[in-house]
Amino acid sequence: MTETESAADAPRPELRLALMEAQLATLFDVSSVLNRSLDLRDTLSEVLRTLHDHGGLANGIVSLVDEDSGDLLISAIHGNDLEPFSKVRYRPGEGVIGRILEQDAPWVLKRIGDEPSFLDRLNVYDPELPLIGVPIRIGDVGAVGVLAAQTPQADTLIDQRARFLEMVANLIGQAVRLSRTVRAEKRALREERDKLRRTVRGNHGFENIIGHTQRMRLVFDQVRQVAKWSTTVLIRGESGTGKELIANAIHYNSPRANGSFIKLNCAALPDNLLESELFGHEKGAFTGAVAQRKGRFEQADGGTLFLDEIGEISAAFQAKLLRILQEGEFERVGGGRTLKVDVRVIAATNRNLEAEVRDGSFREDLYYRLNVMPIYMPALRERLEDLPELARFLITKVARQQGRELTITDSALRVLMQHSWPGNVRELENCMERAAVMSESGTIDRDVISLTGLDVGAPPPLAGADPIGPGPGPGQVDLDDPELDERERVIAALEQAGWVQAKAARLLNMTPRQIAYRIQTLNIKVKQF
Ligand SMILES: Nc1ncnc2c1ncn2[C@@H]1O[C@H](COP(=O)(O)OP(=O)(O)O)[C@@H](O)[C@H]1O
Ligand SMILES: [Mg+2]
Image 1: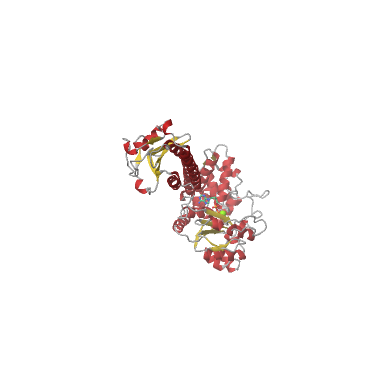
Image 2: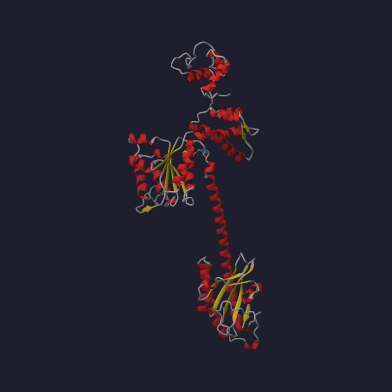
């Protein structure tokens, strides 16, 4: 659509040269503007300003295709705020701008007011002046926008100006492509992050913490209450009772859920390492500190720090911890600058801290700082009613890992109920995993459980000792001991008889019916083999 110059009105070489020199300088400015920032709108309006100030091009406009609607929207307009033009859109083919996009070719209009398809929606153009519009292209996508500007008057150099505008449009095209790539990658990353967040949060939802007993219901209530605030929480309980699981649940159900959950096992490190782990260190603070490093407190800023096995830290370290819990302040190792963080602390211990405070090995002031909101995790043997559901839940977890179906039988569950579980849920989890490995068919019955080496029931009778013989064998309870109550006597007899009820009945001079009745009324759990 550009008009070819006739030989007669070819411009003088001096004029051409002056223009070219100005254009080269402008091009240099434009490319450095485009390189400066990733904020497309800002850079585009700066490009238009450069074109105006140094390139002799007025009323510059960049419009870009909106990827969702396919319409052209105004992305920058020289000398104006974008806001009043945010509603203006051109469909491809509509008006001068829409036509340039659709035709994907430059268009030079000597007097824009003469063009019938000129819509003048923007009301910024001078109808007396020429308009040059060129497509903005991205390599394999094609035209994605239009760059348009007016020249002061129709002169013999207008085609040269059009070619120059094309060069600028090519540079803009690269910037648009880069900005689109960055935006797409940002969006992909954000989507992935949100998906991961949902998964992580889902993994730490209450439905993954099994327990219907009174004790566990209390724990859930406390977690729900305490999660809302930034209160320090101290989780107490034996190893394997789910302290870490609860710490996670508090974090992921709290307003800090989008912040980090950082964990540190205090028992795992000697004092000096613990200090630099928690507080970080400056470069050169000690041999091996080759670079500055952020500590866990800094990493947890805005989130939660879980200090596991807090009962294991030394007196010197207790003092340091007290300070940060009280003031929220600390210094990196080898650094003089005081740093402040916003961290919620959750601590856990299986120790009897009260006893340690009494004997002076745990600071009382730190104890009170930590013990603001204690949560007590019951041992598994104190909530055996939860065991069947726990076992099924853990089996399902293993099944998912192994990619096959696993079921556990009632007889197996009865065997599990006989064990005292000193290692609590962690021990049960390991036992279920071993059982799954041992089970070829995918059914876990009591025979599979016995293959796991779980210690259930009485030890087998000692070799040489006759359990039915008169008097107690070595290490056995005397059934005639007057100190024994009825329940203890029946259990002792059952143990000596290897839990064969008929044999135990004979030891007690009872009939099998009588002993069965006693087992029932005395609520004795019968061990099965
Ligand atoms: N109530 C529960 N429901 C489901 N799994 C549990 C429960 N309690 C503990 N577990 C599992 O048992 C294992 C040990 O729990 P953990 O939180 O590490 O215990 P602790 O920190 O008290 O030693 C983990 O794999 C955990 O997922
Ligand atoms: Mg633990």
